[in-house]
Image (cartoon, rainbow, N blue to C red; front, side, top):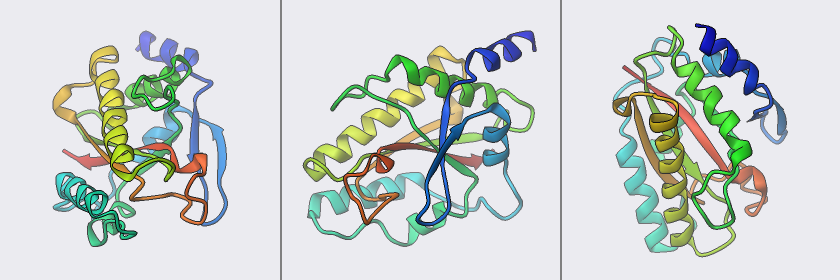
Length: 192
């Protein structure tokens, strides 16, 4: 556990996106915040299919309509989750070095007894600037980059991490589609 404490101390500068409806704040991210956000509670996880959500986003991007994925995405709100600010190079899936702190804290939390063995869904989101299909592809690549960092750099078992991208289909701030708040990585606990 000495390594875990050291990693937590090194990664103390990471941030989490949070807030109530219409109000967004950024605060220091801690391992305990991650554990508390992702802990499973009874009745939150059912037969949720992340690949069905991915297909809905791909359909919406291909149609070019304004309709975001519907009923399946509404179930996301009921799942244990958090949104994390992970910075990437412009139009790239390369994680910026300063964001490895946040990824490391997530991995550290996943190694705790409360979350060990849980399946994690990494969902990439973009803002609405740029072509819709490009945003969808970029969000998939970014989610895959975070999943790869968790599994390769931080030794989270690959069987416990799934990644999808929703592009601009689930804006956190729909009133401001190009807002930086919409560019995020969402971490969802899918249970065992």
